[in-house]
Image 1: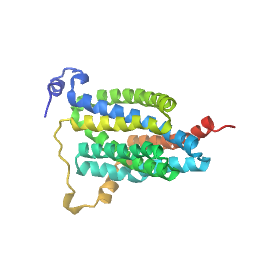
Image 2: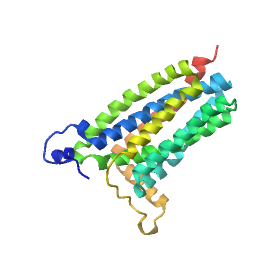
Image 3: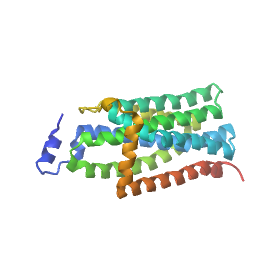
Image 4: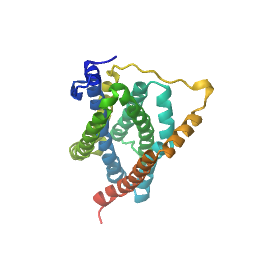
Length: 262
């Protein structure tokens, strides 16, 4: 399906991306997901410290388990996004994350919440998130024509920065108003909004089946060799990995310093 925006882009005009219905739905859903993820990344450590009296080591394990699935599954998620419907993979990731997070306020209301449950939720959310993100990144080129990709990515980056900051502030406000457990309902809602927006995207998809019985790890190896062979992609990968590692260290400690009395 080609929109009038796509056709005008092909003719050399500079159409407004905001008139591109599929791009708007994609951007709205992704912004909601980023906002919600910022809520939970702020609220879950606070919940562990304030409600469950978590120690430094326990908060570290909580953060580690949340970061472990992306480290282990990112390459597999990208290969799966090539083989299957990207929209379905995104929606599945959103709904799994929403269900996992919804279990936290329910358990808190029943006075059954434990640190073990929080760790399981963090791991499930991390795994579902990497499935969603890998598919979301690879879906964008099928939504807009190639001449619009740079503009699309710049708008996505700007909006995501705003959404991440807004999500952290919203998480703090919800924690103050509702308590940390019920504040996670804001993230649950964001995942449902993301799934709804993704379901409304109308774009033909042509998932690539596994070629002649090739295994997933073979395709992953080809991708790694391709990235390693391009100095720009290799540098970006190393920078992003280093940044993610540093942020993980920060997220482990900030809740303890903010909420544990000296």
